[in-house]
Length: 215
Image (cartoon, rainbow, N blue to C red; front, side, top):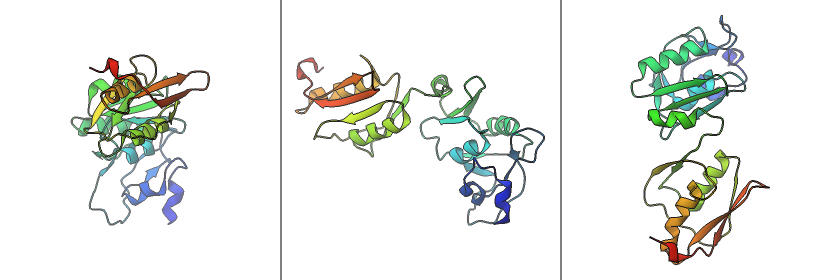
């Protein structure tokens, strides 16, 4: 375990076990990638999941935003002397993956959809993934953890999500993502609506939406 001293505090030990050492002994003030490997059970060489390699490269205080299906997307990499060069090389050798470095907001954004980068390169990206493996309530719990809005579920009923989807826009407000999603419940026997309290930053999901406006 002597190699742990090479890994900056911002990294998790699991990154090292994935087969690459991140070293801060470089010409840049931030760490780069070197060509030292650690024995592991992985058969992957020169590839790491996007969340591991990009969070590993990100300087302290920077934020990494990943687009839908990017979290475990395997990215090829090459040795580099600093983190910016490493990201430039990752962009070059991974076709179909788009990466932006926002110097003003200290954000690294990556996606397989170029259009999503406009939203991902901000500190609070307005991209929301609806996962069909989760219920509506559990999807909202995920969104709660990704936003600065407290989403409070106030109904005893829950709904299955029939298909995966990606929604773009503000969570709250008329025509916002929560409002649009809950309009689908107006077609059911247990319609829901959202009440937003801006003074406390909370969105309350409540029963009793009117089915009269259902399409």
